[in-house]
Length: 362
Ligand code: BGC
Image 1 (spheres, rainbow, N blue to C red):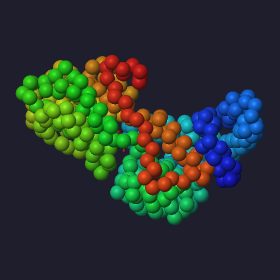
Image 2: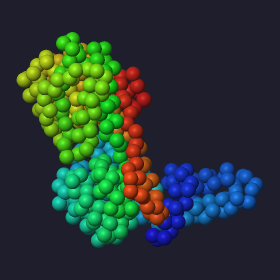
Image 3: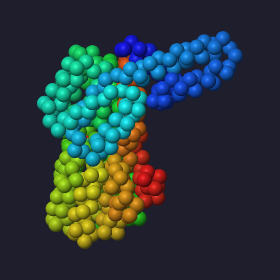
Image 4: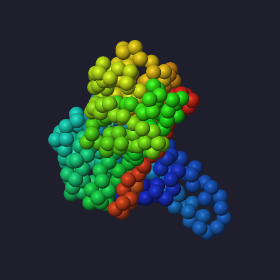
């Protein structure tokens, strides 16, 4: 079974369209082969033959399925729920048998789950680590078991990943999302300086600071402002651990403490921004009039608030694109592809979301 899947995945790597349409089984693969077969050269005939083999292999493998273990850092995370649903749809649509485990934000628990998956003999793993600092240990474990592995959402360093050539990270470059948050503020009428005192006074509601997404978004959102020549004043920076309730509490306390001094509320993700919005509204402040609010992710709830003018903007963290990329990378690994050091991170672009283009994302 492993070999058949290898043949399929190898063929997939050479014909991208096949990998995108494999859920349709052999039929889709045959359709992909048609243009090559139409050509008259010997090479084309050869290619057509190869594609037929691919189609047959794909059909057989999809029917046979493969066992995939997926570890999520915690199910109770708004963004990772969207991501998990996307992964499930894609993997099951392709005929894989998938088991999702909830790490419950506990690295020890997740380590057990990884070991159990290995003991069960899964064909591949997709892991969203609980702690980025546990990357070395996770990588050593999957390497020892020789299991092709795709890490998602929490990026280890290139050096850590270089320990295992059957390992890839699929995610986004969090610096980009931070920069876009800063740009959203610079694109407002007052460029973030609502009271006209020559500086942008902000509070920063941070995700889990152990996570590079939180570190980079915090740094690069402000860097975009200073790079544009703006003066900035940080009134407060607190960790909200990606959590809506914590976002609400932090914003509530800061609004009580700093009042009108706060011109911008930066949130490392949308769930915390939705919480902050509740506090902003309870304090009688009006977003885009006397305060700005930005998040990241483009959760449905945030898109609605952007459309209604209750959030200045957000940044699409493309869960579907990342899930597709993760499955594609997993299939390449199953096909025997290995990754050289320094080439183990695959990035999906972030996209800025404003009231002008929000409808495109809803
Ligand atoms: C998302 C957050 C999420 C976190 C989990 C980030 O990329 O923006 O919403 O909580 O990943 O690690």
